[in-house]
Length: 175
Picture 1 (cartoon, rainbow, N blue to C red):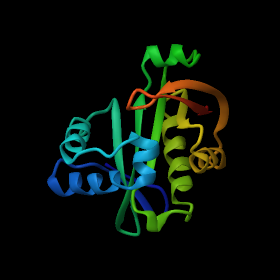
Picture 2: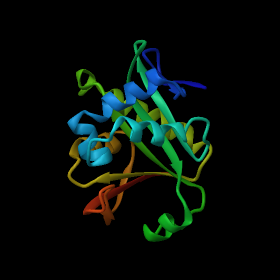
Picture 3: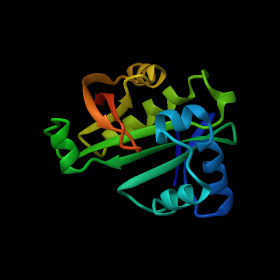
Picture 4: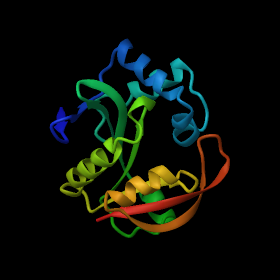
């Protein structure tokens, strides 16, 4: 599936091949990606394991961000389970969370992330009741991107990162 954001950007499904996994792995080596997305550098095998099970998955749906015919990052959405909705005090049932990263730093600061988040959020709101972004509170650029995309701050929450460390996250929402 392809989703066209605008004349320069489209989103495509990830594919199950070595070239795709190498691309994702290289992006995950970027300090800004592992600092806020994974909190550590993933091995190649971990990247393959993580994304292979998401190919064709409708519960966790990743897309490659393509800007002017160049793959530059990833955006994904995941249906929020009842446990997370309760933990965050969200009363609606049909809720998704989104994640995004630009893996190629030469494309930082061009507004691409904001354009993608605006588009994917509008797309998701046609299918779900609410879109949540769960962002580390120290990740000012992602929080600002969400605010520019129309999200509102919901609250700060205690959260455990992928390493099990306690952190503060900012929940932002759009409905």
